[in-house]
Amino acid sequence: MADIDGTLTDMRRQVSTDAIAAIRSLPVPVVLASGNVICFMRAASKLIGASEAMIAETGGVIQVGYDAKPSVLADIEECRRAAALLLKEFPGLEQLDARYRMSELAFRRNVDLEKARALLAKYYPDLEIIDTKFALHLKHRSVNKGTGLVEVARLMGLRPEEFAAVGDSANDIHMFNAAGMGLAVGNATPEIKEAADYVAERPYGEGAAEALYWLARRL
Ligand SMILES: O=C(O)COP(=O)(O)O
Ligand SMILES: [Mg+2]
Image (cartoon, rainbow, N blue to C red; front, side, top):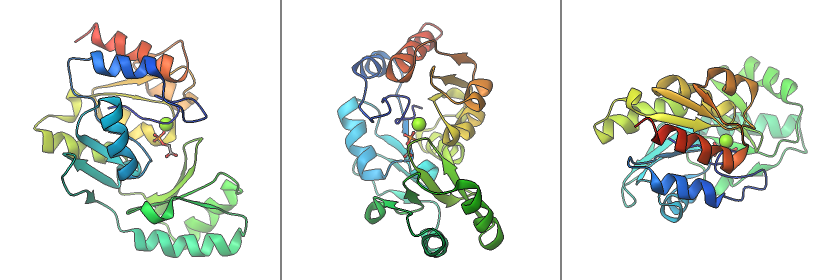
């Protein structure tokens, strides 16, 4: 399982050719797991050479098979109602690729996160806001990359513990917990490094390649 932004990419979201080469060299399928929308994931998986199983919208959407129908695992309507409240309270808040989202909503990181979280806790306790360092995600607490991994593993006929996960930030913690092994890139947050079995010395895609080659030596 590989996170995309901040793990295979740099902060400009440009993918690392080192990370792509490492993914293609692995003798096991690589499932991309991201906060990105499913149409982006489908194209990214194909171009990178990852498997046909994908986790999008931080576990809210999964798809196994490029031409399969995506499974939407959380109801976006409650997120829409909460977003209307947040947009009223924080007029500068900017939504990201709203048209393509099916289970959660994403925003640019230009809001007072603590105030937004306090408002959400009061009116929408089943929702949370996750900061990935690339975007804020307004999502159901019931789904995450860990629940996505459990479901994708089931569909692939594998156990979640048979997976290793590589990631960088807050929305990767549940997949670290569900997978058998967690690998952090050098730029990962302290929380992710703490939860990892291996912490790469190098950051971003170079760190992902380093971690994946370390993993390959143990397969
Ligand atoms: O969509 C984001 O904000 C981050 O995406 P990621 O899960 O690939 O890091
Ligand atoms: Mg990331």
